[in-house]
Length: 164
Image (tube, rainbow, N blue to C red; front, side, top):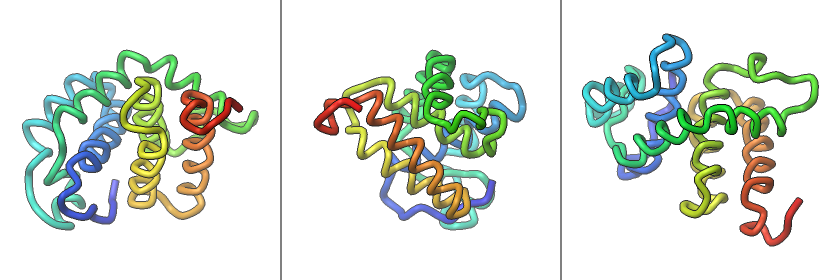
């Protein structure tokens, strides 16, 4: 997974980048999210600096408690997260049809949105949209934006002023 580097000083964004990478790795290798989380904490988070670190799959600055919380939520609520994602895809689309990076990104975002409360849904959308732009092409990022927005409105309607 290649990506453009994230600006320095954004450890919560770094945690979300690491969570997307870890969910991707978990799906690709069949390893549990917990096992992958331990690998990331030991070998990838806080390692290296600059664009080279990101290109090697490292995340120089990440808020580890948030990273762990996202992975734990994604693992514990995987069926519910997948159901939410499926509910906001066009009827001819399936989860398997999605790019694996996009699938990991949407699962991480769904896990955060399902937790409720903080951060606000708009922050979740913006953070994952920034990550999508780093990992995915423009068209896929727009697709991600649509799904993220629809999920956020469905899961947290009070934050948007009215239920959909």
